[in-house]
Length: 254
Ligand code: HEM
Image (cartoon, rainbow, N blue to C red; front, side, top):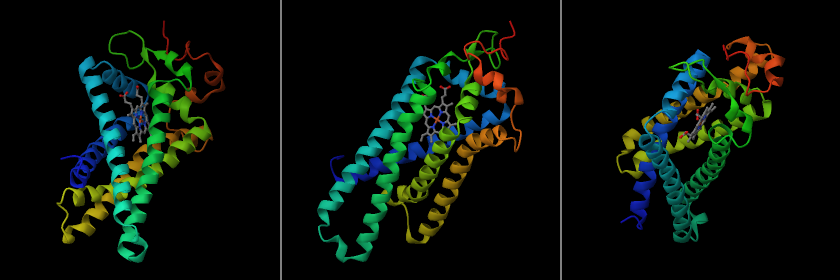
C-alpha cells in the first residue's frame, strides 16, 4: 500500500501530525526555563529518569517519524516531477511545484538543525563541557543531576548560536504554516469551505511555535546585553563564564 502515492501521502501527513504535536510539547517544556533553574532542571531530570523502554521507545518513535516524513516527502516530490514534465505550461501546477520545493528546502534545513541541536544539547559533543554541568538545584533527592538550565543559558549567551536557533525557528514556522493545513488535505478531510480557516489556524500555530521557542534564546541575549533581566543575574557574571563548569560554585552547596 505504502509504495503508492496515496499511501505515501497518508504516511507523510500522519508523521507530520506526530511532529506538529511534538514541537508543541517540546516548546511548552522549554518555556520552563523562564521559571528558573529548579523548575527546568527538575523537568529535564524527570524526563531522563523515565523507564528506559519509555524513553528509548519515544526517541525511536520520533526518529522514525522524522525519517519517514522526510523520505515520503522526497519521494513524492520526485514522483510529481516525473509526472509533470511540462508543468511550466500550467500556472496551478507551477505554484504547487514551487510550494513543495519550498517545503522541501525548509524541511531539509530543519533536518540539519535537528542534527546540530542533538549534538549541541542532547549528545553534547559540540561543547563536551555541557555534559559536566551538575547541580543539586531541582534534584528530587539531594543527588547531583544534570544542570540543563546552566547549559541552556551558556549555550544562548553565544550570539551566533542564538541567532542560528531563531533563524531555524523562523524556517520551522514557515514549514508549519503551510504543512499544518496540508495535513488535512492529504488525509482527504479538508473541504473547500474549511480551507481558509485551516490555513489561518496553521499560520497562528506556526507563530505560536516560533515565539514560544525563540523567547528562550532572545531573553538570554537581552539579559546579556543588559536590556531586561529574566534570570538570576549570577548566571551572567564573568566568573561563571570562566569557571570550569564541572565545579559550578553557585549550585554545589556542599
Ligand atoms: C529554542 C529552541 C529549542 C530549545 C531551547 C531546545 C532545548 C532542548 C534541550 C535543552 C534539550 C535536551 C534536554 C535534555 O537532555 O536535558 C533538547 C532535546 C531535543 N530537542 Fe530541542 N530545543 C529547541 C528546539 C527544538 C526543535 C525545533 C526541535 C525539533 C523540530 C527539537 C527537537 C529536540 C529533540 C528531538 C531532542 C531530544 C530529546 C531526547 O532527549 O530524546 N528541539 N532540546
